[in-house]
Amino acid sequence: QVQLVESGGGLVQAGGSLRLSCASSGCTFSNYAMGWFRQVPGKERELVATISWCGGTTYYDDSVKGRFTISRDNAKNTLYLQMNSLKAEDAAVYYCAAGSYVRSSGSTNKRDYGYWGQGTQVTVSS
View 1 (cartoon, helix red, strand yellow):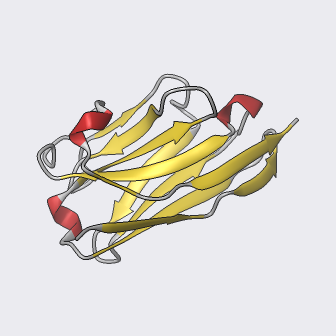
View 2: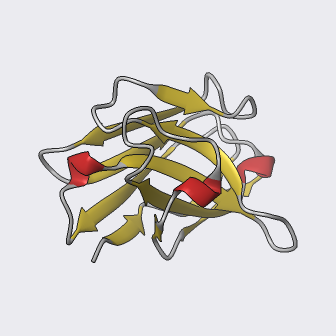
């Protein structure tokens, strides 16, 4: 059973940085493409970034392109999201997700991710 645990969220001022981590267990981490998604109350969960099993292919939503960086360390079974130049609109609960069927390239469709963490809150003060 794949287990994902996010950490690193918190309160940051606008313009600041945070690094989120997602630790996995119960699986062979490199068998999965990974994604970061975020959700605010009353809205659907939206894609932030994805990464293929080896890190060779990444995708970013336009809203975070140039500010966020997704990466993974397969030896540590951990996914990361470096968030710089944070804006008020980046505030959300951030979730990591794992998908095995889209391992080679990742996917922008959240339905392709079968395993999800519990989320970590990111709050941005202006």
